[in-house]
Amino acid sequence: MPRPPRRRSYDQYCAAARALDAVGDRWTLLIVRELLAGPRRYTDLHADLPGVSTDVLASRLKDMERDGLALRRRLPAPLSVFVYELTERGAALLPVLAALAEWGASELAGPRPTDAVRAHWFAVPLRRCLEAAGAAGVVEVRLPEGVFHMGVGGAAAPSGPVGGSSGAAVAGTAYGDGPVPGPGPVVRLELDADTCLAVSRGSLTLQDGVREGRIKASGEGALANALRGACGG
Image 1 (spheres, rainbow, N blue to C red):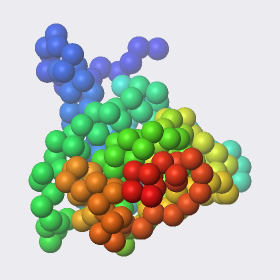
Image 2: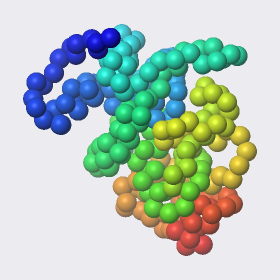
Image 3: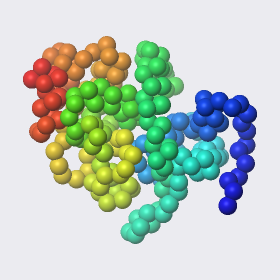
């Protein structure tokens, strides 16, 4: 069955233009950011995308389904709810978002009075710094604004109940909202948003953050040891 025609296009034979045909609309990349945490219900997406209207969100999700970036499916009983999740092509946008976050970090001098804040919005820029530890594992990050977790070094972030079985790894999941579900070795980092932003920018190392008392690191296993090494023991 042929795919419905695109609503608009730059009509340029250029890879960048083709990419923007698919993800250049307002909100699309931020929806990708949310779905990098794994399958999400429509209501969850709307709650974590403050400012988007229900009509625009529904339209963007349909566009993403049409363009092969996301799909909609019903979870098995007992949940039996519909969720949206990224396809492999959609999940491949992670490095694009990471590059955008790195490029835009200089604009985050401080939150504006109208700015919404979600803890897991720090996950994409922070992930690059944690990958530098060189070991695989799961990291739980605790901020005053909330908690998120992510897999680093090739480890997938375990999903919560909405993503299927609690603690199961979801392919393509870059991070998860909330504490790590289920048992298993985990490294916990406690810091505030300013420190998290400074580490993401590269203006503060993990080592200096721990030395100055701005970061508390705890946990067991190879990743914990690697991070402690990065943090000066």
